[in-house]
Length: 403
Image (tube, rainbow, N blue to C red; front, side):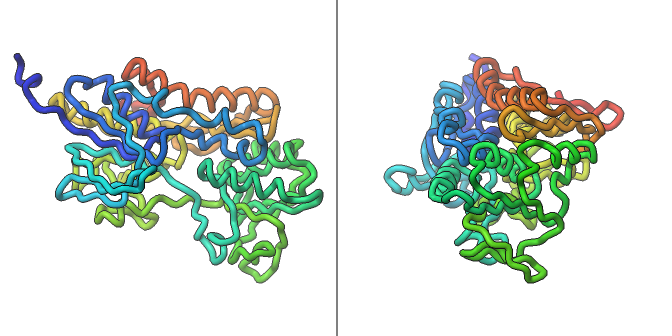
């Protein structure tokens, strides 16, 4: 029997059951099924497509299309435990967790840890936002928002703070699904800041967006029970405020004494390993790569899935005695829904800057829907055959391709 077969199983712990966590677990299970023991810890037993939560908030018939059993997406050799991690002890290589059902504490040891905890809305960004603003960062709060919208009478006003994809998709979905409500969109800069002028012009003239009252270059200083107060002292009244302007990450890495950036994201290198604790790897919204070659990366499933796969590739390389590859990612598009039967797909350069090429209307909606389905389908593909998922890399003259 070979020495590799005699070696004890490497215990891999994956924190998070989102795009990056599932991708990492599936690739590891398929590549190293006889050499690793993989446990995934997730707050619940479901995978929720966050990119569809604006639909869940706006309509009553969308929830089943956004929620999937983790067991159906995760490799059969991966053990799934429902719990919330309270602290990581990197010296002892142990995580301290509370069971999601019983609330009983338990601990789990690891040899390698993939930190894939994701992100949530920064609802504490300004005074009053935590108390008076809704969000759509998870299924529970999207349901809460939907219930609040149900309570509004004809002519009720909804104010959405933010100008990026989340705010745009929510406001246009609401405009189509709930035309009896008055919608306002307030953003600190321009709406659609990552779009080209051509893309932004289409957005402004789109069917759903034209009925939305837009306040650009308006920074919110406070959220109140009556609406918001802007930084210049104006009050914009609303019956319901939704915060969709920025994202925050869990404080787990900081609370555990790991190196984080100012936003609290776990700092990793180009291999997705933490420099001070290389047995801990990061993937997805909850981490940031410190190198300038990856400074263009955005919080998105288009980033999370490749990073999850790459974190797994690094662990595979370590266990099989090969050099760990460096992560590289080239973006292709920004895709968004503008309500049913309308969409906007913005072609981008590899560094995520916009080009003049856009796909709009029904074709844009069709492309966006396929893109959303693809984001989930790649997880199932990876479950069936590890290594099936590939992503775009920068041109060779800019970076060496990832193996």
